[in-house]
Picture 1 (cartoon, rainbow, N blue to C red):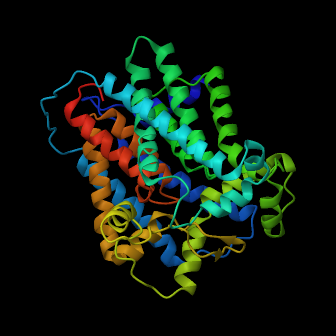
Picture 2 (tube, rainbow, N blue to C red):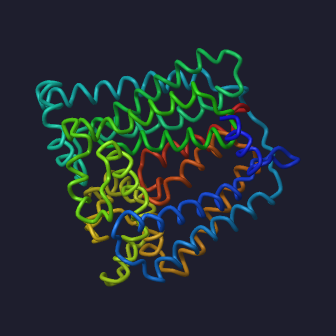
Length: 401
């Protein structure tokens, strides 16, 4: 375990100015991700990846790396901070999110009658929730609940810099509980997954020492990540998902590895889906709808009174049905290939700039964003984007964010 910590320190040595080399993180992640995605062919009879899909993935991560490298070279801007801390505001926000989260569950209970009914009909409720233009939960509640991700990352940073660690741990656990409860409103996992990515970001950013106790805690969090899927599958050990994939396995996979296999397929298959998209679908412009969905939805809801945009895609054949295409496809349809290069460079520049400025909360949050890129642009989801905006605002006026 000590060797893992030493390896992180060796790969990501802090610069003389104490800035985390986030460009190196992007480079390492892209190499590991693409390698593991391609190695999947040893176990799964994936469709061949076309050359254009490989080039687009390679270009995206290369641009992200180059942009971050330039961002790290930008002059550091020091702004006068108005507040030493934002503790009272954070407590207020936590109370507000608690109220809107539990009220959201009250609305769910009123609609469906009981927790038992929700439990036994989790899959139906999931289907009734995803991809809908009108939500059961009021828009104001959804917007308030979305700030929980910012709070979670802020308390991660406080965990490193605060002497009263036990108190901060309690706040972190409570924030994580609220994230789980919000995910369970639709029996999804996107918030829990982003939280896990931010924890990974925290480990790399601060080079946290790995010990047995922390490994057990992380495994517990991974189990919680599996919980929404287990509930809506009636604790079937992911058998329903495996049944869809099993005909395409090249070797028999023990049932004890069902969780690992389903999540490997979930996270690493997008490059195959992108290849299928490029081979079978005529190009059509989405004009920024995929990457700037929160802006479109605010305009649709409050100005022109139209339905919100959903991010649910058609199924690709990879060869099983799969409908996640990664941020790369969204950039391509929003801006075309040349435009996606420019936007990727700007994303990287932003990541490097905040790392250079030692905005700790934002940098950890953006590492979570990087880890999310094989699935979506996380900022296409209003919850993640509004938390990012809040972190930027607080970093401009508060010293310890």
